[in-house]
Length: 79
Image 1: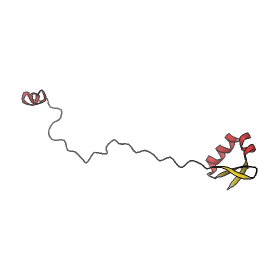
Image 2: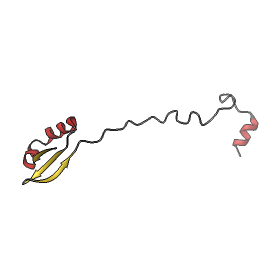
Image 3: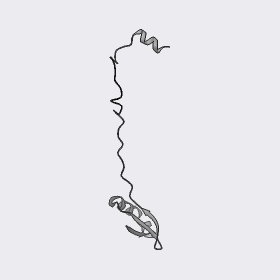
């Protein structure tokens, strides 16, 4: 684990953060020789899975869903 004085970290903050992200190392920031902060790289980002198709096996289509409804069926919907 590397250590760095807070004054040096302040001067090179963006560069140090980029190095930590690439290397994966943890850095201890010190002030007057005592630990002040601990900087670690972020955990890996988990890929989100698409919800499209997740219910594929859960239902079954009966009959022709594109055929027009008869008058009896429309009466049921209009109640």
